[in-house]
Image 1 (cartoon, one colour):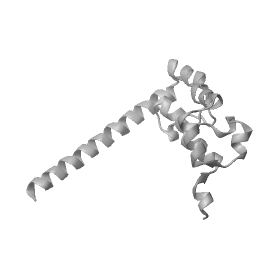
Image 2 (cartoon, helix red, strand yellow):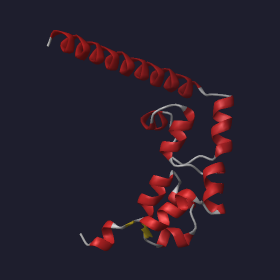
Image 3 (cartoon, rainbow, N blue to C red):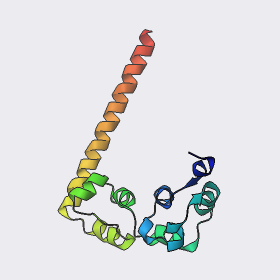
Image 4 (tube, rainbow, N blue to C red):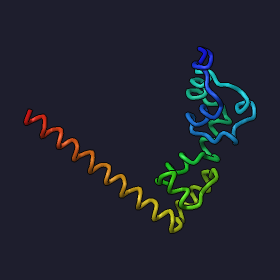
Length: 132
């Protein structure tokens, strides 16, 4: 790997790090390699097209899942395979279909269990520290 490659990224990588849907970006963005400096500038001082994409979408699946408070797998189980706009996400949240209610409950249970496991591990570590 050359030093030039280590200091730049593909458009797909930059889009992922920016939390935007690559096919919705301008063709110029899709066709170019983004340097770290350009990425930093996009992140700190987003152009209008980037601000608009972040505001209204379409959003990539990880962002859609986060906004719906479910997992990416939950999106797939719910049949959501494409990017959604902010308006579409809002509509789902205002009148949630049965699959979304079930996925949100599942996600809440997963988070509760993860918190329980984390607390149990902390308690064991504290107990071990007191003994040793």
